[in-house]
Length: 355
Image 1 (tube, one colour):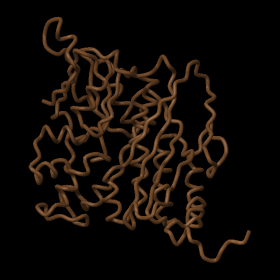
Image 2: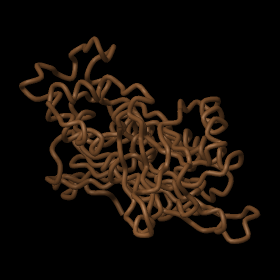
Image 3: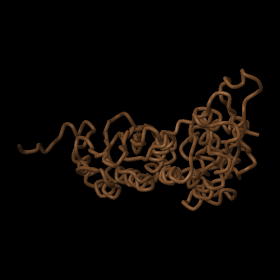
Image 4: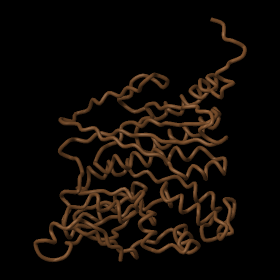
């Protein structure tokens, strides 16, 4: 059937040809992520992955997340090839917390008007994130939805699936008083707290713009705010083979106070020594300009620690050394203690102290 010269669908705001061009462009980026287990190629209705391997009781672990209002910075700067790394990081580093090796990732990109160049840039970042995590970009969806988004804007989300042997799931139940808390350094804000960060740093009181060079940051504010999220998954999967990891907390929305208790057993308190690492300048800048209370800072932001790892005290130095040789700066930042005294203390809800 001959295609009509005028497309009512295109006139309505959806360009099928642009969508096909975007798929053609992103194919090479997806293929560079392919690992053993990937079946078929990009462009199918669904992605196929063969588990295989030697696991006796494999358990799939899945997570879903997005990039949030960090995207507003990308829009303003016209830089789209890093937020895909953020999207992958937010997902694979949730999955690895359970002890799972990330297998594959799928993205969802929703736009008002499809620009193949922007789509390619975003997916290029997603592919780079998958390479860093050691997982495959198995597929995804690009949805063109006129009138849903402003020109040049989009939303980006995705989900990751990993696998772990059933008897090696990490759930924190083995954590006990005296265990060491190892902090894995972040690369800055990562992808959380941007609503507050943008309000403070780009508000009228700051006198700053995205292209302002900030001496204490050593670069422009925009460059700082677009710094990609550090991906821990690949290094942690290797750490699991060297050191018994008792629990992990991904420090995302909710910061220290909401994330760390999620993995602690009843009767335990995580005591974090805030002087044990140097808080990156961007957090001090936010706190000073916005006059943000310190407790709120530790509840909203990662403050320079993007992942927390619980190990036996005798293994802490080995864990730190291993992580650093694998490109993840880390150090011991605290310990687990018993909450209160007496029998009732063992049943008390877990919590965090930052001292």
